[in-house]
Length: 140
Image (cartoon, rainbow, N blue to C red; front, side, top):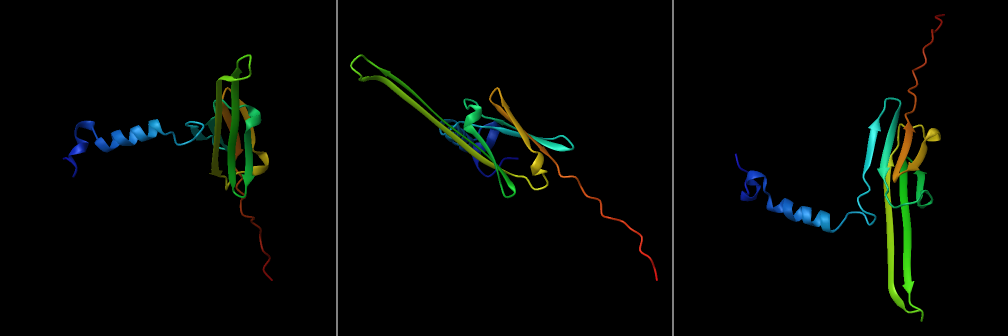
């Protein structure tokens, strides 16, 4: 059965074409698509965020209340001048990224992170469930 618009037939949707053009031509983040995966490994969550082009010193991890905030910012400048000091070429690149994740239920004292090969890996151990205290009461 077909939808109400004739554009959705046979896998071709005119509106999707324009949405894809917008998404590919105008990236959502100035630093590109910094994709993040979160895995549940039983006793902890592992967050892996792609931050290509950033140095470790460019990345900041902060706990703000019940949120983990990842932010990264870098700036590069490449200047080429001729003998008289006039520009032949001058290129600048600025990139920044900021994202927040809820961390309720996480043992914030034991969060650890490492950055290698353009991937930020954050280990977030889950809080231990405390079993309710049981005790026998004396009847008088």
